[in-house]
Amino acid sequence: MSSSNTVETLIGAIVVAIAAGFLIFAYSSTTAGGLSGYPLEARFSSADGITAGTDIRLHGIKVGMVSAVDLDPKSYLAIVRLNIRSGVPIPDDSAIKVTSSGLLGNSYLSIQPGGSPKNLAAGGQIINTQGSVDIMGLIGRAIYGNTSSASPQQGNAAPPATAPGDAGHP
Image (cartoon, rainbow, N blue to C red; front, side):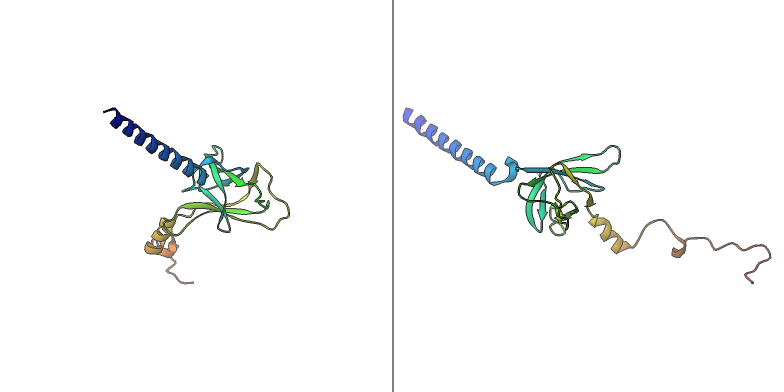
């Protein structure tokens, strides 16, 4: 009976060691362990789909990740804190936009580098931003047309009033 317990203990130890090895491998091969780099900030009117850990890409190559997303209580803009990989300079006139990988793909931030010889310093802010696009709203407008408030061109307005004695004659 004791040899059976010894075998079970050894098998259990091997399973735990393999699980620990898998966790260490997964942690080191992903960006979950953090990304060394420098912080930047950007403010968006709409940051749908952007959360901490979202990729930041430059010409399709991952150069960083979002470290935090907060709301500015005064301007109601989304403050997105970025962590850009060391050795990747970002010109100070660059633009950043929220985009996605296809129609149903994950959202990510895409940086379009500017042409300025000056680069953003750590803690700097990317001024030129473009928030996320409401895909479902665009599809709805394409199918049903513009459903905003009625305008005279839509035929919902009353006919223009005429002055007494004026039957539409000049």
